[in-house]
Length: 248
Ligand SMILES: CC(=O)[C@@H](O)[C@H](O)COP(=O)(O)O
Ligand SMILES: NCC(=O)COP(=O)(O)O
Image: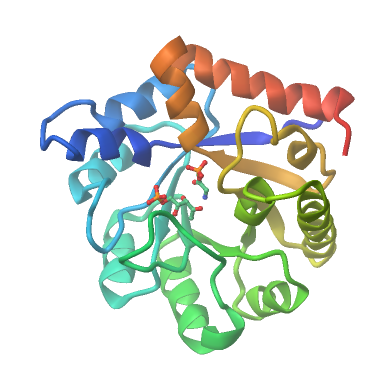
C-alpha cells in the first residue's frame, strides 16, 4: 500500500481576515468543515495569548463539530494548559509564542524548559490529548522531547521556507531530513510545518519518516482565487505525487 502523508489544514488565517474587521465572517469553523470535506486529515488552530485570530469560541465549536482530529497549537502557559484540559483536543502542539511576532519565529526550546514541558505533557495525557512539540530540527531538542514523553514532534520548516539562497535552503533541508530520520528512529511521530507552499512542499512530503504536514497560509491564500475546496485538493495532490515520484 502506498504511504499517505497526512494533510492538516491551519485555518488561523481565515480568522485573521475576520478579526481585521470585527465581523462574524469569514468563519474559520466553516472553513474547517469545507477543508474536511475536501480531504483534510486534520484541522490546526493556534489561539494566541492575544487572541489576534482564533477565538475560544472557534476552538470549542471545532471540538464539537470536526470528525477529523483537532490539533490545538498552544503556548505552554497555565492558562492555555487549563484551556486544553477543558477542550481535550486529539492533539496539542506546544509552540513558542511572542506577542510582538508576526508569526511563529522559531522552535520551542524544550531543552531549556524540560520540567515544565514534561509536566504539561503529562497533564494533557491525563485527559487523553496527545502532545506534539514544535521544534527546530536539532538532535538535542528531539532527545529532550523524548524525555518529556511527547508522542510527536513537528519540525519547524520556516527556515527552509524562508531561506535567502539556494545554499541556505539546501542546508535547512538537510537538517530537516536528518532530524526527521533521527526522531523516527527514536519512535516519535514526525510532523512538519510552517511556511510550506505549493512549490516547496514536495521534498518535505517525500521524506520517508513524514507522517503529517500542517499547512495554512499558502492554502488559504490560494483559496482566494480557486476556492478552498480546490486549494485543499491541489495540496493533497502535491503530497500524493511527492510520495510516488517525489525528489528529495
Ligand atoms: C506554530 C506554527 O508554525 C504556526 O501554526 C503558527 O504558529 C501559526 O500562528 P500564526 O497563524 O499566528 O502565524
Ligand atoms: N504548524 C504550522 C501550521 O500550522 C501552518 O503554518 P503556515 O502554513 O500557516 O505557515
